[in-house]
Length: 344
Image (cartoon, rainbow, N blue to C red; front, side, top):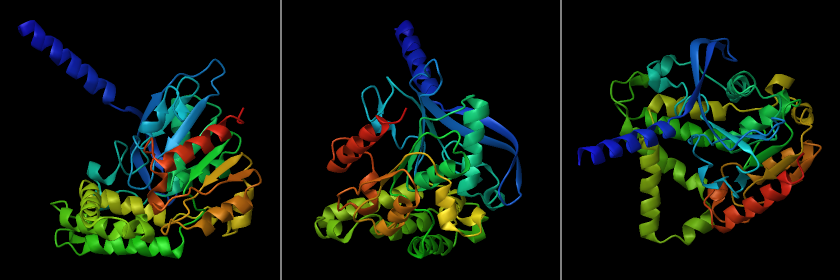
């Protein structure tokens, strides 16, 4: 019996160790605003193997409130991101997951980071940590597509293709107002205390999640949703936000709110988009009212080698959620497979 329990313990430890992320440390990391963090931790995972030429790596980046596990359901042998062929890297962006974030102790004193800061950290991971000179693709959903665009603009020599799900070249006014509403709701929680709280303002976070919910689905979807299911989804969204550290959530959404690829180009969006030389797959949702179709079409029209297709769905912003077996996931799977098949 004692041997049995010892074996169980060994198995549990093995599983726990396997689940731990890999970590890349960047020392004296300088942010876009000039702030310096003595140690920046970048958490990531890899699946699959590098080929002999070391040119089959794909970097995937999650959305604003996600983490490196966002693409897990479609990574693996024979899946959309086939690990029999590709070396897939998933990373926690600055400010969340197991990467350095306000919850580590700095709180409001954590540097105000940007989407481009995320790219700088990921570039260091890929080139110095993994010693890769090229990426077969960089892709992501929402904030992850913001990141991917910046990769294509600032590192065109490395990126051979871009996969953009529900993308935008900048945070439009509608998107900014939604984020302002969310953060205001959090600030109304008495426990917020200007962000220097002793107790995480969970109630404010939960209410912010509920306020955010109607923007990530569409009106047709809400019309067909039974009342009990609507209540369940509201609670799920509230719980998801409530699991965050408040400062971490606020600063993460602030980074998305400030997103604008044209900023380094004196506000010239045409010039910014013209920097992208890689073939680019643009997949917006037909019913997204958080990041609208006009934003994606602007990318389509400004990138020389853009392939564009709209995800047919009434799920709104959620249409890009990768849940295998859904019509949306099947559509995305077909588009990505066909696109990647042409990427050398």
